[in-house]
Image 1 (spheres, rainbow over the protein chains, first blue to last red):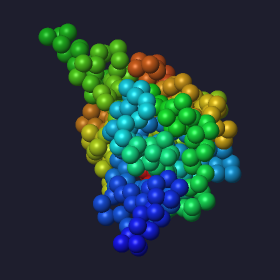
Image 2 (cartoon, one colour):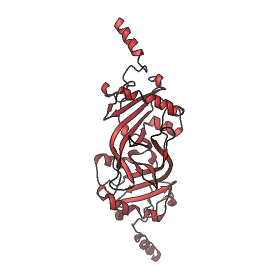
Image 3 (cartoon, rainbow over the protein chains, first blue to last red):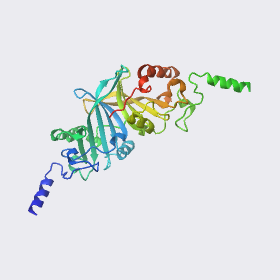
Length: 169
Length: 169
C-alpha cells in the first residue's frame, strides 16, 4: 500500500501529469513514445489530408508538409479554435535536394523528422491540451529536444491554439 | 450530311484528337476546361492524398505540393508504371512567404496555379496518355502555356511515365 501511494506520488510529480504512455497506435511499444508526452507516430498518417507545405532555412534546410486527421482538417476548414480533442497534426520533413530533372525545382531528399501534435485537453492539461512528439526513423528523439516544443509554440502562436501552420487554400 | 462529315474531319484534325471536352467534374462548364486537352479541376481534389512537396526557384518563387487520387497514389506506392488510366495528379502552388512567427520558416503565400494531369490512354493517345491543365482561380490559362506542357514532360521524365514528382516517404 505504501509502495502504491509512492507510485501515485511519483506519477503526479511528472512535469505534465502524463503518467501513462499515450498511444495512437494500438500496438505501439513504450520505447516508441515521446518523452514527457508519450506521443507515438499515429498509424496511417501518411494517407491523411494535406494542410500546407513549408520550407525551413539552413542548417535544417528542409522541405516540409503538414498533414492532419479528419478532425484536425475539419477544424482548419471551419476555422474552429481551439482544435477539438482528438485532433492530430503530423509534419513530415525532408532535406532539400536540387532536382536533377528540372533546374528550377527543389524536391524532397532524405526524410529527417516526423513531428506530431495530439490534442487531448484531459491528458495534457499542463501544455494547453497538446502532446508533442518528434521522431527520427519512427523513434522519438531525446528528452532535451522535447523540452523545447512547448515554449516555442507558446511563445509564437498562442493566438492560433499553439499551432504554427495555417491551412493552404 | 456534308456538314456532318466536315464536322468529323475538323474534329479528327485537332492536335491531339481530343474532340469532346474532358470533364472530371460533372457540372464543369466548357470555359473551365483546358485548351488542347479539355481537362478541368477535379472535384474534391483538395482532400486527396499527399504525394510530395516541392519548391520552385524565382521568378516563380513558389512552394508546391502534389496530391493524387486513390488510383494515382496506389500506383506510386506500388511503383506501378505507367500510371493506370484514371490516375489524376494535382499540383498546388503558392508564392513563398517569410513566416512572421518563426524566422527560419517560409510558408505558403497567395495561391498561384493549380496544375492537373489526367491519365486516359484512349482519350490522349497523342500525349502518351496524359491530359494537362493549368488553372488560375479555377480558370484555364491560355493555349500558348498549354502547348509547353507536353514537350517539357517528354524531354525530362519520359522514363517516369512523363511525371516529374516522386512519392515522398
